[in-house]
Image (cartoon, rainbow, N blue to C red; front, side):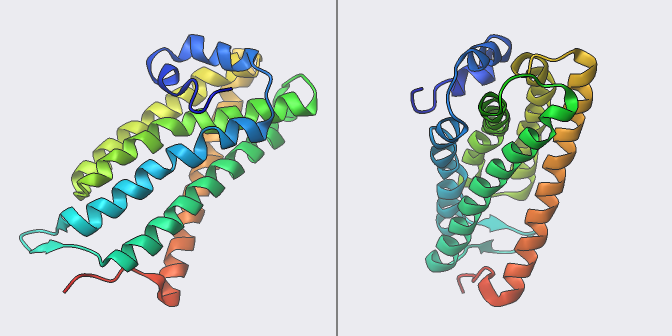
Length: 205
């Protein structure tokens, strides 16, 4: 599988793309390494540029920016959190697969589960370009729309990729969305803890 294969297709024509992804037989580590480390660079690098060069405004105040060192450490943590979060989402999807009647051997289920986690995360990772202009209202709107499309991809992709009935797929997809929300909350809590340990943002005077 080529690097970033299916990335554009999953955004433009997900129905046929999910079927193409299902027909491929790769390892879960292949589909993860061929996509996530590259796509996760988008929000990390764009955020670094945005918070150090462009900045943001709170109310009628002055432009706020972070120091390069502070921004680099926070963006590196964000990058690591994205890699870990998507990997864990794939593992949870795989763990739940037998419960919802997904057939196939362990390797196949592991690949399909990881592929689902990777490709449903794609819209959010690509939307990370918005961090070049890190205004809260804009970031919230764009990431929110990307997250909504990711949820749509979950509900549409599971019955195709996992080859299960629509009834089972709906319950499975709902469980996947719930796990995704739990991972998000856990990441936010970990961020608060890390900031409390002194790794928080340092602003330019």
